[in-house]
Length: 325
Image 1 (tube, one colour):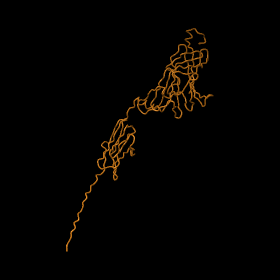
Image 2 (cartoon, helix red, strand yellow):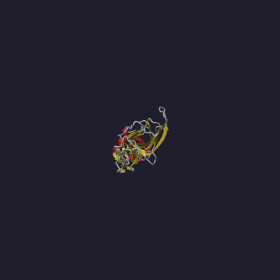
Image 3 (spheres, one colour):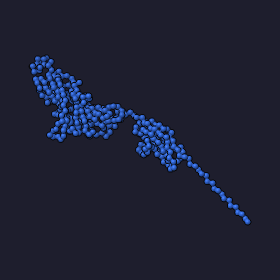
């Protein structure tokens, strides 16, 4: 009996084990200057990831705009034009379908760049429209008068060279950092349309407005103001009034007040140059709310009153009549 032997060849297939997936962050702290471009490095040290994700403070980042990278071929994250809000903790995450791994925390701490005057002015004027009234919801404006000298006085007319100081807030002209104030030509920003009743005022020159970083604006133009509303009270004493109000805005849109006592007086005589013949013996300021037949609404009206008297020394020197006494 023949015995047949069958040899069975065993095919041995080698099993190749896949290296575990791993990623690392070569640096864990970045300190770029604001506006610079920074790349947060992420290196795949083992494995073949199918997806790379980046997180900032547990929130997944959408890699568009200023962000680039975060791909399997380029896992690092590049941030262009770094801003202060980019500060935070970042993590690079890789996955291959079966495993997900992450780097250590990466800290980004930008250095704030000091804003120059050029930066501030360029920023606040970008898109600024001087025809638009700042509202919140009503624009509160303070107005005060600073007489400098008496130009003309007669029983009917008092003419001053004076400064009007007007203050308000325009949030569009604020900035977060840098120098505390700037000055801008008054012709390029919104101004309250405060006028003097009965007179068209021509300012001596275009005064600049001083603007603080919180948007507070102070504008003090110099001009000649004339009152034809002078009334004789006694032999050599006269009372003259100057009235100011907004030409087009009522109280609901623009509310005019005197400044608080702690800020500055409503009438500041500190730089007044005394007149040889006449002296100001008293002054006062009164706010009233007025209605006018040709306008709708209530309009705040500021009245500045000055009491003028002929100097006694001037009368004596001229041997003037007793009405000077």
